[in-house]
Length: 162
Image (tube, rainbow, N blue to C red; front, side, top):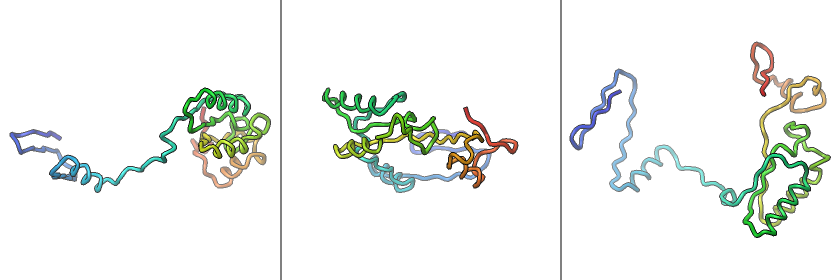
C-alpha cells in the first residue's frame, strides 16, 4: 500500500487489494480523539494499586529462613517493601503445584503474617509439568494431564521442553 500525503487536508491510499477498515476520530481536541479511540478499542485495565508498589523478587532462595531474613533486613533498613515474590524455589523438585515441605514448610504462615502487615505475596508458577513417567501415579498434575490428553504432542509423543 502506498500512502501519499497531499497538500492539506488530503491523503491518498493506493492499494493492490484487500479490505480496508478506517476509523476517523475527529476530535476536535486531542483529548477527544483519545476518548473516541478508547471507545473503539476499549479502556485499559487499571492495575491493582499494590502492584505499583515496591517489590522484591529473586530466584535462588534456599529456604524460608533466608526469605524471612531478607524480608526483615529490608524492613529494618527502612526500605519501602510492598510485595514479596517467590520463584520456583518453593516447589518440591521444581514440580508445579507442590511445596518443598523441608525448606518451605511454613510458607502458608509466612504469607498470612506478611499479609497482616498490608503486604502482598506473589507465587510464581512456571507452567511446565514434568512428563517423567516414573512420576505416574505419584504426581496428580501429570496423571490428570495424561488422562485428559491435554499435553502438546509432536509425532504422537508428549513434547519435551528444556
